[in-house]
Structure formats: C-alpha cells, structure tokens
Length: 249
Image (tube, rainbow, N blue to C red):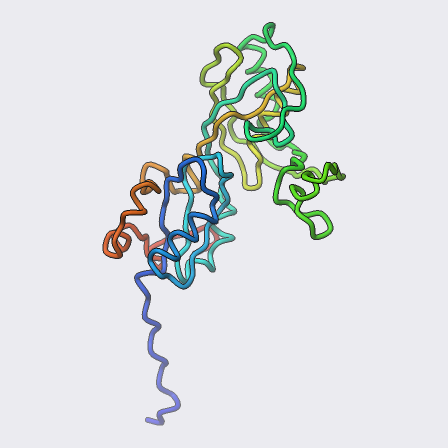
C-alpha cells in the first residue's frame, strides 16, 4: 500500500489538559490564582473560565493546557451565588470595596418589601453595568475612567435571572441566593433593589457556588492548593477528554 494513504497517528492526550476547580478565598484576584498555578507547577498554559472579584469567594474554574480553548464554553454557562447585602448605603462599585456615595434610612423596610423588590428582577432583565467594571468603552476599561471621576454612557445588557431569593433578613442585612446568566453583575442587582426600595444598598459578600454543572463542593481550597505537589495536582485535574461541555455533541 502506498505510504501516502496511511492514517495519521491519533493525537496523544496530555493528562495536564483539563479543568481544575478552585475554591477561591477573598483577597487574590482571579489572575493571581492563575499566576500561582502556572508558576508553582511550571505549566505553559493556564487560564480561567470566569472572573471572580477579589472580594468574592467560591468556585473559580482554571483551564489547563488545551482546555484554554474551551474558555468561552465554560464562561457561557449559568452561575449560582449566595451572598449578603446591606441596606442604607450606596457605593461607587456597588459593593463593600467601593467609596460610600450616600447613606439613607432603612428602618422602615420590611422583609416582605425586600422580597417584593427582588422578585421584580427575576426573568429577562436589562442591567446597566457599573462604572467600576472591566467592560471597555472605546477601548478603555470603565474602572479606569471611574478612577478619574468620569461617568460615561453605558449600554444596558439583556440578562436572565432564574432565581433571586431572600434567605434571611435582619437589621437591614439580607442573605440571598441567585442563579443567573453569564455577564450578570450580582453587586449591581443588590444596588438596584436598594434603589427600588428607596434606601440604597450595596453587596457585602459573595460566594459563587456553581458554574454550569460544576460545584464548589468539589473544588480544592486555594489555601490547600499552595501546598500541593505535582502528583496532588494531577489527581484533581478533570481531563479535557472526559468532559461534556456546552456546545459539544
């Protein structure tokens, strides 16, 4: 048989190509976690499947090797969060990290009123992204403009909020759970319900518990990951060839 008709050898799958589920603590950025794993384990390609703000905790999906090619599929999945918000104070970032803009009385706000306002944000909604965000306007990140005191026009985004539930309410603080489509700013949801109630609000804490089919219960804590050996890491990687991701047959 003519050699030119021989089939090409099957590509060998690298066991380092896959996903690593990390339970991020508050403090480091998502890129800090990426840098830590890439440098500590000397891996050539590491990315992530959806940013968590420095103050947020929970599930951060790292993409290793050829898994970086499926970043859009990972990021496009729905997300689930739990967190808390405080009534009475608005900030420029819509969370506890930002500068205080206004303080208003919230003593008259009842749990029933909060639940009613939250229900208004369930379904298809248009959300105006906050100025303190990485979204770009004319090639410049909005947060960089915000640092200069600029407030530019932004286009509202169409999102879908599957759930926005009040779990507990006490002394102006609400504990909530939400499941939402990609691109949702949960801190802005908290800000918007405060505006709807007329007293203002900001997000205090946030934990991502699920991203698509992946759960934070199956993730390794970042505090433990820093002590991992290469063998420990290999045991926690979900090989790319075993995954069924959105858009795959």
